[in-house]
Every structure is written in structure tokens, then in C-alpha cells.
Amino acid sequence: MKRKFVLLLMTAGILAGCSTAPVADKANVHVPMDPVVAQVHTVPASTIHYQVELVSFERSAAADDGQLLATYQARVPVMTAVREDGTPIDNPMNSQEKKAVETAETFNGQFGVWTSEDSVQELADSAREELKLRRENGLLPMESYNMNLSCTVYQTDHLVSVAGLCYSYTGGAHPNTWQLGWNFDLKHGTFLDGEAISADTSGFREAVAAELLWQARERAEENNMKPEEMYWPEYETILTDWVNFTVYFDSSGMTVAFSPYELASYAIGAQEFHLSYDWLRPLLDQESRDVLELTSPETGEEP
Image (cartoon, rainbow, N blue to C red; front, side, top):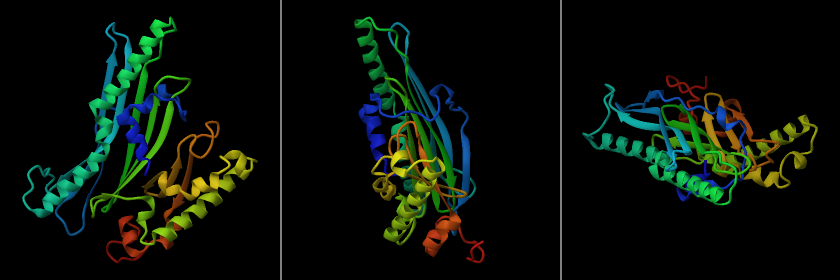
């Protein structure tokens, strides 16, 4: 979740580099245009709902002679605070509605860079510069640049978790790929670190790290390899620092993901480690279980 440098790279236009490779061919990536409502839940003891839609943003840029320079596609979540009757809260009528609107704005602000015209312009400018150099040096025609972000959303009464997959081709031998994750606390209107889902952040971080190490070693053994051969030699340090990589939740548990080259070489590819709610539950206090809806709303007992 803390991979904030990816967003900084986008705004700075550094995506023109070529450092990672995709888990799928970029030509097969498709971003539908129709908005999809993810889930709508009512916050307990409140007349306010938070609706999350996945909204598509697409742009393209061409050179003066019509040659395609770049295509830019992003499918990102957009949150709207709505009243009990479903009407959007455009003009807050009280402090509760004002707070709800601020909560939605905080959430949406995290994804605004992905739908920024400046990001599109940065990509197009980089492509235009490469085209100019190629033509001046008589090189073969270039392939157009491409950026594509797709997201999925999981939502409870208290939490919105977003998993993102970003493909980017900005010249070079192959595209880049990143796995991204954001977790948003609806009650407090803030984004959470993966470890913050537990009141005992230190203990939770250590327990998850131990589980990731065990899963990584098991995976290496299944591939008839030593962990130091399958992953980078410092894989233990990387896994112990899991909270600074991609973390997201879905209906079955928590996923910790590493993009290609973060934990292992491109040949090994992206690495995902899943921790079920059955595994997580003993590490969480009652409030954390409520956030993840691991208790019955009627009795407070575990299902």
C-alpha cells in the first residue's frame, strides 16, 4: 500500500524508464468503458452511504503527422457520499454530511493523479521525444507508448480495499508492471497501512512476516529450488518489510503482493501471498474484526 513512489513517478514523468516486465502481454489488456457499481453499504447507526464506482478515463495523443504517440487508460474507483434515499450529498446540510463529503474527497484524492491530463501529457511528451530521436537517427518506427491501470474494489461497512494492476510501455525491450493496493477506513476517513488493521501493529507485522517467510520457502521447495535461488538473496529482509509493499483485502482474506523484480527476477514473475481470515482472526481485536466484518452484526459472535 505504501508504494507511493509509483504515483510520484507518474506525476514526474519517470515512467519513461524500463525496469520491470508484465505478467501478461499489454495488447491483451482491455479497459471497459461502462461504469460498474462495486458495492454499497450503510454505515451502522447512520443515514449516510458510501457508493464506489469504477470509472474509465481514456486519452490518446498523436504527432503532427498523425502517428499515434501514446494511449492512456485508467479505470479507477470514485466514491460518492449519498443520503439514505440515494441522493448524492452535493450541499451538506449538517456536520455529519460535511464529514461524509470530506471522507469521499480524501478517498478520491488518492486516485486523482491517475486521471490527470498532466499524466497523459507527460506520457505523450516522452513518446514525442523518442520519435524525434528515432527520425533524426534513421531508426525503425517506434511502438506507441501505453499506460493502463485497472482496479477492483472490495467494500465492507467500514473498509474499502482497492487492488490495482498497472501496465506501462514507455519504450525499451518490454512493458513495465506494478501491483498496487489501497485500504481506506470509512469510519475515520483515512488510508491504512496493512499492519494498522490490527491494534497490535508490531505483533501483527511480525506474525505476517513469519507466515510470508514460511509460504515463500514452501513455494521454493515446490519448484525444487532453494529460496535464495528462487528469490533475491535478501528475500528475508524484503518479506519482513511486507507492510511497505502492496497489501489489499477481499472476501477471503488479505493478500501481500510483490511486483516483478521486487522480490524475484522477471522470470519468476510477480509474487502474491494470501492469508485467510481464519488465519488472521486470532491476531485481531474486536474492532479490527468489525472492520473486516468477521463478526455477526446481530450477536457479535464469530460466524
